[in-house]
Image (cartoon, rainbow, N blue to C red; front, top):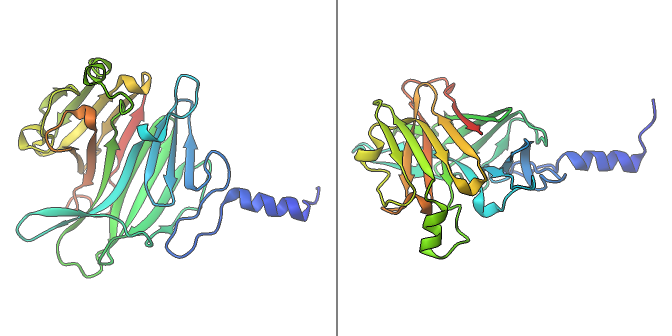
Length: 272
């Protein structure tokens, strides 16, 4: 068995990951994942988790290369706190509050890590990568003395895919066949285009939440995204004010804390 030379051995270690400092996720040092905590690659897309705990899905272009970062679909973990009067608000993770559970991995299939929000509450994020499916979930692991109800949420941001086009008419032409199909928890189906202004958070649209969503955008070179909330969880639909969906929108996945006490709920995103 050949002996690895010292210099080569050192390089091999560096190629895996850099050690993390307190409160940071470890970062890979190999292409195309430099600075990322975990990466996963398929023929049509790349998925990664950055040192900031955010998931990023980049679709490939016609040449098999990742599209620009402005087209990235982002997965942002949050903690939702509900006040006694019923109002709720989301807390973003603290910059120095990350902890890796699974090691940094350039060929990740299971990714688990933890974060902290202001006030000290801690949460866990889980991703499972299987073929063209991204399966995700999370849970609150420490309320840190907070007496109000807390819930884990993963907000999936769909960007303005036509950001590069400034002409309103040309943008409308690019998006004329784009569609978002939703299935609400009450069984009602919605078919939305990207050009009609709407308040996605309204009761008229959201109802009690979504269980399925299909997003079909020509800007992703034929890519289509099928979301399913899974058991004991729903998606909330969100956009900016009352603007058309072409400006960007989000699906906020939220498990029901009362029904998912063990944190086993999972959503599925199938990239087609």
